[in-house]
Length: 242
Image (tube, rainbow, N blue to C red; front, side, top):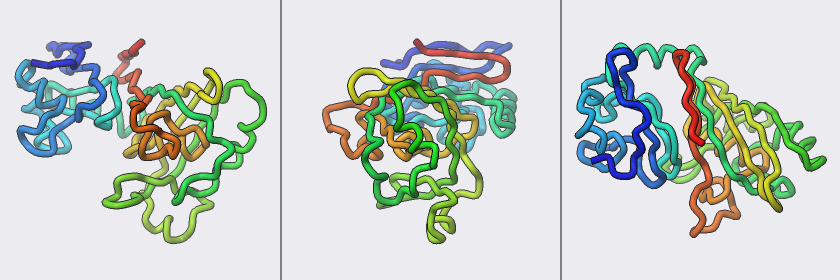
């Protein structure tokens, strides 16, 4: 039984991968055998995904992970050859993931604790009411109890933050357009991902995701996370959720 998981592409000999639409509230993969997750639920109908050696044995052929409260496209390899190809493509920066979000306009508020000063262009984005298309990049470091959150690390960060930061830079390309009073819609694309990268970058620029209890200080408990994985492009294929 796959429950609320939407099956978009089933594995075939020519295209040995499973593509699903994961609902919000469901983990992508189990922490331990038997935990409820998208991978766990899909194993009954697609046992071949368990035979793939991925990053962790319990994850099978899971290619990338979505946060539990994030809905959208989840890619799972159904053969070792496909998994190895897609990971190589991802490392080459050719695996494109697209996210859409509804954001609050918090540009008049200072960044939250642990964030470096906003990039210079973020101040320029305050002027006018049109759309914005920019890219932002940073390193990242864990933040808070048990590293539950992350914080961007930039050239303006202190030495302590720099020492704790990831070695590589992570870039988010974003397009933001107004949508109602104080609300904006964002489309974000990445090819190399760090945990919470897009949500954290949006918050850093002053556009925290609506309903984001980790990075939006104005989030309300009864508002779900308005963040969705809506596009994947890999190996010459492209999939998009409406």
